[in-house]
Length: 119
Image (cartoon, rainbow, N blue to C red; front, top):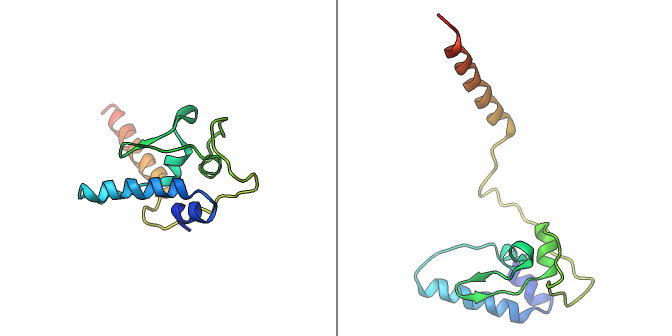
């Protein structure tokens, strides 16, 4: 479920309209930007509302919960029982495994130690 779909189903039609407006601005400029709207709706440091495409977006409590951010007093909540949708993993940008980083790190440290040995 996309952020916009969740907003429409949960009574945040006004916030979804702001996203539509921002997407129209992006499209009118000929850009193909992608944005994580949950990050935008979670707000900035201290719960400061985010501004995207010249539009100020409200801070939503459910977005802060979903993004693992501390819920701030200015966060909007229209239903105390609302739950964010699950995070969907796409494998579009897979994370490198820790073992590959460790392997690289240990190889480079061996090279450094070999260079440091007196001849």
